[in-house]
Length: 128
Image (cartoon, rainbow, N blue to C red; front, top):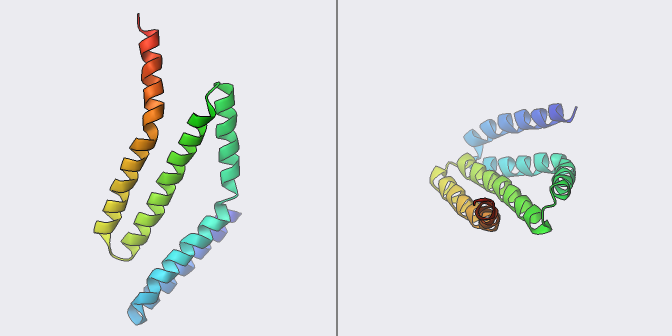
């Protein structure tokens, strides 16, 4: 199973990082970033299933394509922000990680405004 390969890569990378931190701490962050990229590349093909499922759900619910693309942007932003903040935490920069997360939350709120406006319009139309 693919998950066992991912776990194996993660464990090997963790051991390597622990060893490198005592010898060459500057290389430890590179191993962390490379491991994240490798793991992401191993699971990226699963995203097509998620995208197809969301597209199918939006067709069934007769949603506009803009809502579909907005939802994908929000999900993508959340994953990228999480990846970036974890890299910062791995480098011992918790403060920067928190700022990355704050920026991501603001961007996600901004992306969600059109959906929220449509929802409010729908609620207003339904109300007597």
